[in-house]
Length: 367
Image 1 (spheres, one colour):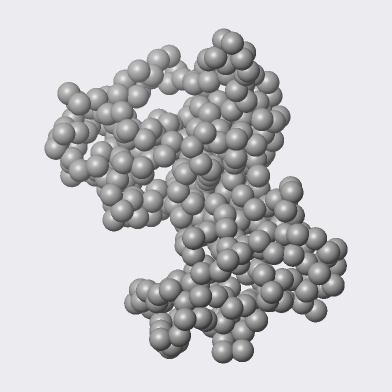
Image 2 (cartoon, one colour):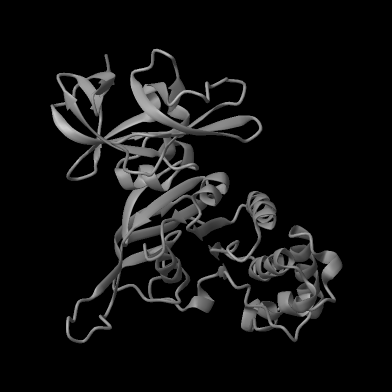
């Protein structure tokens, strides 16, 4: 089911009666979610991602704009009539019911032409449980399940209605790291098997990038960039997107462009064309720094952290906006840890320039 958001806006009234300033939670969001894809809404707390999800679900009404499921305008349609499955962060299971009863519950409320026989309901519930691999737990109650199992019950309950659209609101936040990894893989598998258009809200960029077909990066209610996860990572449109995506985060340094050379402090680190002389922010991905005895960027050497396959070089630079400059290198590369400095060359495709005032991307070509 294709989902289309057309100039979607949500404004909340001010809680401060003196200022009377309204809060724009989502601002003019236009996007088409293709049928059968998993889309990640990504951003920090307060960016408007959950509000967008709740408007799609019908739990909140847009201030303006339209929502379409396929060709159907569902903007004014009630939640129960939209054909959505919704999974919350806190599972929202009924504690006095068994797993089977929790999954059956949405089907027992169907009326009219949608009403099912007991046999049909049991068959659907069992199929949903098998899909999320909890069919052996049907007689247990939520208190007897792990966090990951409870989340699977919540997903099965959302899927049993055979929804047109599946909505997931930070479904992994309450799980530990190992369960989070396992459950996100399960969500991707389930989405692939069912082919249901899925919208997944998270503040965790690693989660969004690992399972989404497309990510939507948001900030203060405004969409910053939309694209395939790797494409957005490799080609950020502004400094916010560049900083938000990536683990470890991108290195941000202050610099300037003078006569076709990019300077960080006194070091000219890259020759470029097509850029006017100006002060800039420079973003360098950790994997974009290569140790080299004749490198053009000099940093202070603080530490080497070996992480198995990779090693993290922890360095410092007076121009850095972060406390440290971090480079990720192959652990086979040997670094002289007795030296107080280290030199790097930069990989141009992992090196970005941003306007100092607007923080928008400044594009360049390498000489």
